[in-house]
Every structure is written in structure tokens, then in C-alpha cells.
Image (cartoon, rainbow over all chains, first blue to last red; front, side):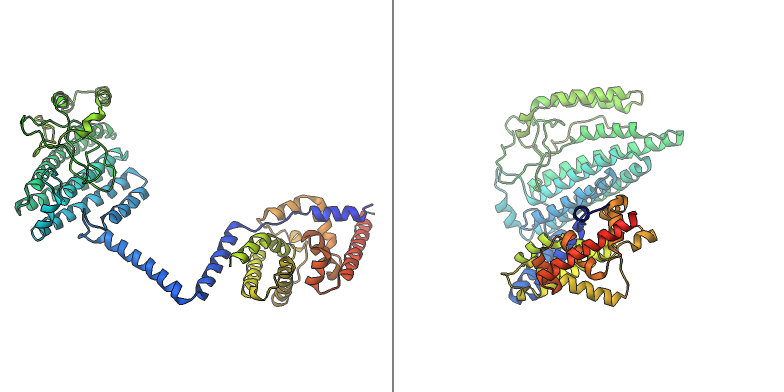
Length: 354
Length: 165
């Protein structure tokens, strides 16, 4: 027999349904829309206008070639680029994203070179005698940095076909970069810019040679039926690090005072992979030169590169090499003097056999 | 708006639960009806007397809205109709009800009560309204509401006992 109190108890115990969060959010949104509709025009319109102006400025900043280093909107441009980079989740996508940024920097460099003749007085004032940086030099260097990053990401792609495709694209872009840089140089740029452009041209030429060699070797190995091309890519990475280190130098801000180059001794230091710092902010400046004592290491390394070019070397050799390099890393080298023309490139006379 | 959203946060689950038990545990319909009721309330929020209970006010809107919904949809809703038809609803509450025999048993028997008793019992024990609020929602007097609920329970007890025998 059931009594009334038992029925009451059971009724009270009946489960309570709960509204889903998505329905709540939808409702909040509906209310917000209704609120906006009833808001006086003088509040809604300026707010909408502000949003539209911001969107417009962002689109302009991102797409305009005239927004270059030193421009007010350049920070916004690089922020958008970083968002795009963050969205790329695979090595393949990241490589393409870096390459796209490098393309932008190239176009900006072209624009800066053209406009520098018109606004040369601005650049002269901008670059103090002890400060060798100009927007053009920083842009050209940033282009080189991003190209290197694109190569690094391409090397990490495991799928041989994709990796090969990326290297081919990078190779094409580097050809284009070389052509544009040579053209810029031919138009007659300031000495400071000319030095950086020379350096970047040399670096790019070296990279181009290495990529072509690797592509040939990969092709040969694939013909032989060897599907794993990671070994060749690892070698390429190592050679790339010898040309210009994995983390190219950039100074965070142009206001930083750099020590003047060591002209008296006339023995400029050679860079090593270890004395260069990672690009930090949106501001890309010219490389910081390495310390003199590292030059010996470079020569040693170039010997090692000879070994790598030799097909007989083993994977363990490469691993040992990279271990040794990590031990050499000294933070005080970061503040070493600026390099002279082309000195930021290691003197690697042993070019790979094509 | 902030004030209203505070009320929404506090009472949206209750209104959803109110509809849920009256539209055959159909969560989608209950969600839609809940949103419609609150939008209606938002539209007429200026006319709400702040000195009175918001719960009673929002339940009377829900009550009228449900009556309109029944009229427009021309469907007779019963508490155990769909469970018998074997229609599956993803809602967890519904799963709890059909998996626990005492709940499904009492709801099936509650469905056998006249509409007036059933509604009053649901308002009192599932929606947890006071007799004062029930009176405001249904338009009955407080005493009348109390009597109806009491009679409804007696009636329900008889049905259950008869079934058990």
C-alpha cells in the first residue's frame, strides 16, 4: 500500500532537467542583438564605425606593400602574420607560411629601395653614424631569416614528396630573391644597405647551392629505390646551419646601441652558429656579429662539412657534431660587434659538389 | 538588461524543467519554448512589478505560452506517451526517468489524473512553487490550489493502490 507522503517524496525526487549551455549562449546573443537594435544611434554607429575602421586598417596594413619596417602599421602587419603562422599546424603549412612572409619582405624591400631615392633625407636622419641599420637592411635581413625558417620547416616534413615539393618552391623563391636583390643593388643603394644586401645575396647563393645538391641526391636515392630521404634532409639542415645559423641574429629594436665594428684591427670576427640570437620581436634588424675566437671553430666545421659531402659518413657523425655545437654555445657572443660586408657568412670554401 | 539576465540565469532551468515535463520530455521543444518565454518576458520586462515574485510572473507567462502551444500544435501531450512509443531522447533527465521504475510508474499514473489535478501536482512538487505562486500562475485562490493538490494526491494514491492490488 502506498500512502500520500510516499507519493510526495517520489514526486519531489523526480529528476530536474537542465538547460544546455549552447541554448543559454544563443539566448544571450539574441538579447544582445535586441539591445543593440534599441540603443540610440549615437552609441551604436560610432562603435560600428570604429570596428569597421579597425578592420579596414588591418586589411590595408596586411596587404599594402607600402607598409614597411618603420611604418606605424608595420607592427599590426607582423601581428597578423604571426596569427597566420600560429594557425599553421604542420611543418608543411608552416614552411609555406614562412615563405609567404619572406615574399612580403622581398616586396617591401623592393618598395623601400624605390622610395629611398625620394625620401633619402629621412633615411639619413634615421640611421645615425654608429647605427648601420635602415628599414631596407632590416627588411632584407628579415626576408633571409624567414626563408631560412621555411627551409627548416621543410626539412622536418617527413613525407618525401611534400618535402621535395617545398624545397623546389623555396629554390624558386630564392632565385627570385637573388634577382630582386641584385636589381636593388644595381639601382644604387646606401652603403649600409649595400653591405647587408651583399651578405644576404651570398647567404642565399650558398643556400641555393645546398638545396640544389640535396634535391639531386634525393632524386638519385629515390631512383635507387631508397624512400627514406630524411638522412639527406638532415645533412642539408646541418649544412644550412653552417651557412647561417639556425637562429639568425636580429636586434630587438633599432634604439639599441650596438658597438661599432672593429675596424682598427681589420680582423673582423667570423660568425658561428652559436653566437646568434633568435629573432625576438616583429622588428627584424641586421645580424649581430660573432666573436673572434669562434672563427677557428668555423674552419673546423668546414672540414666537417667536407666529410658530410662525402657519402661515406654516418648518421652518428652528424649527431655527435650537433652535440659538440650545443656545448659551444656562449651567451656573451650575442653582443659582439657588427659584421662588415659579407662577414656574417662563414668562410666555407668547401662548397658542395653539385 | 543586466537585471533581466540575472533572472534568466536564476530561472531558466526551472522554466525549461516546467516545459520538459509537459511536452513529453522533448528537449528541443522545451528549449525553444523556454527561449520564447524569456524573450516575451524581456519584451514586457518594463511592466513587471519589482515588488512581486519574478518566479510567479515568469511561470504565468510560461503557463499561458504552453496553453497557446497546445492549442496551435493540436497535439495532446501525456507524460508517458512517447516512452511507450519507444522514441529515444538524448536528454539525461529523460534517461533517468525511464531507467528508474518508480519514476516512470508514478508519471504513468499521474497521466491518468484529470488535467487540473495533474497540472497542480506538477507545479507543486516538480516545479516547487509555493501555493501563493501556484495561485498567481493558475488564477485560483491559494486555498483552492491547496485543496486541488490534496485531492489530486488522494486520487493518485487510489490509482496506484488499485494497480498494485
